[in-house]
Length: 620
Image 1 (tube, helix red, strand yellow):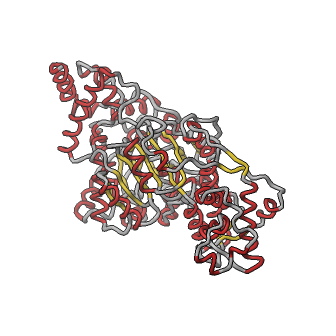
Image 2 (cartoon, one colour; image 1 turned 60 degrees about the vertical axis):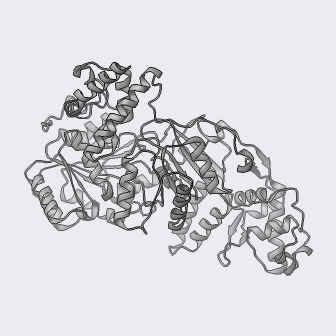
Image 3 (tube, helix red, strand yellow; image 1 turned 90 degrees about the vertical axis):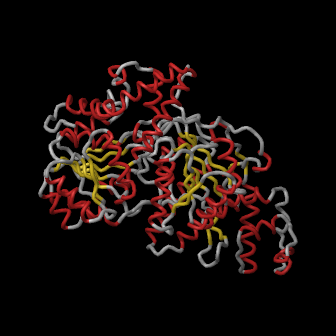
């Protein structure tokens, strides 16, 4: 297929967008970014997952002379990305450690012969002298550094090899560079620009809002049962991702879901590379698979119909949480970001920070990141408003998070906090003892446990003064005291709790403390309808009459995808099939005006699509 290679005019980009990708217009900042890069400018692009970052470098690479080099850490996904571009008629290839020398040599020869439009390269491969010499012998259109937040040493996805990418500017100063990411605060953005030598780059910052995602954060009780309830009541048959903190929990959770009749697969670094690749391939290619994973999974996942992302452990930072939840609903349809967390999560995270090998500045940074995450969990205001504030963006209440849909109650927890803080103070001041959450709650609730009796704690003046609250309620109080930095995890004791400098104001009555009242227990909610209907993998506002056509097109797409060995969304996304189902085009000319139907796909699938529609019409 012939692609424009020399025009720098606006019409060149628009023509490529229409002919290759099948879209009539750019979205948001895409056009400004594309024109800036076509003109030779550097750019730092922040755009939410599903916002169309790829077009920002793919279109300029096709308009400018030479090959676009895409630096990506996602070795396991490069094949799918290349397959998707090949379906569009774009000449794409990759170089990474999965190839043998013959395959690598073929790609290198194609590059030198000018037979490629885009070349994906892993950063560790790019930085080898062999690869640098290869690129020096060819014509380069641009460098696109994807997942650029990996360069941040404070970030959740730090990759040391990214630090070497600043040399691209030194070696090829005339070649424009783009750094792209879905997740970065102002501080991280500055770090990206500094470490990648993008000092003169223009910054393009799109809205971080993903209005189709419903954020829902719950208190962890029986987390597996809570997760199962979510999947059965709101996401039966949907594809989704469940994130766990440890490898063991990944394996146990995946096994539990399978026992419950839900097709779930594990993914973590402890599994063999072949099994990880197999599970990832099944998740991308099959419908309704639930991937249970550590954060080692997911960066760059292009699967558009992920209907939910669930966390059953507390994420370490808001940036990590945003990045991971952003993998839901890339197609713009309703999706859920669900998180369950509890007191033990907070204790564990605080202890991990205290025991980390970094210096004080490093631990302070981790602590501030955790504080921001806890603030998001404990807020009684709009979740989305709080989330976007973290990234420097303001908005009013969203109407699509749990706090907006079912506003939580706040209560004056000052007296309860004083009881808990007094208990901790007396144990330490009078006896030099520190204890964990369970024993403190037993003392407050007046429980005559063997441990309480052994240590004579029933004689304390605080014994039994907290019988007005349940054990669950006290755990909520403790969790919120930790979140407000009124308690800390003692570095010298395993999970024991100690006062902080801020505790004094509450103890002396100088500070009033409003706490979030927790929802009823899971067992009390069983059998009730969910707050919102289960998300459907149907395009929005698809007329009832068009839905059978859409399902017929999905079946056709599934057969094509299987025969090509690619995920179904590589052939066409649901949004495109939905538009076809609405329009029911009767000619190739009419079909060519549907968003997502470029010239190559029209040539490859046009007649087949028309035949599918005609067959459906005849049958009905």
